[in-house]
Length: 196
Image (cartoon, rainbow, N blue to C red; front, side):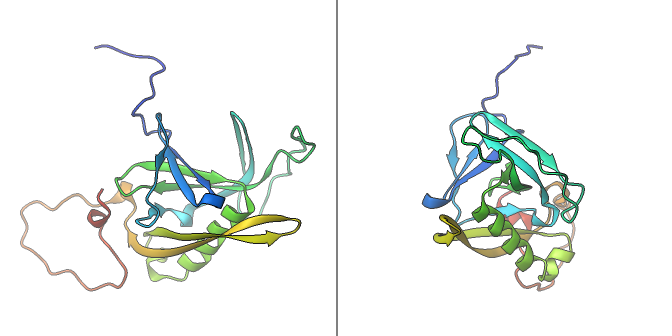
């Protein structure tokens, strides 16, 4: 059987999501050219299992130092960047799924994306689906500039459009059973409706 080394095109195992908040442009990188995500359709974000830590992002570099828990931070690394500013900022790391079922990592350390994840978590945890282990599918509606200190950040507008079962735990299709009418549950959508 042939083998190859170093070829990553088409490999989505290391897929990741990036966002340009001024343009509200969300892209997925999965071993080829970036693919722009349809954020009106949304992505599933496993916000219940978001991780926090110190994150350094620089050209060609990413270093993640996960905290033991959200309330127990590790000491902040003292490394400075080329401009003399701290190289590490408080960041997050969370698993996401696109509408076609590709799993991707979303991590960031900007104020705007951090506030987005915090607001999403705070809204989602109040829904009954959250405690049932379901994952929200989030549509991003806007990215609005806001003044923060001496600079500008962005407020990410969003809507939870539906809830899905975790993709890795999605039930297999039933085998030749009599149809059973589904119980009505508000805002809960089967994983099949999210096309994976």
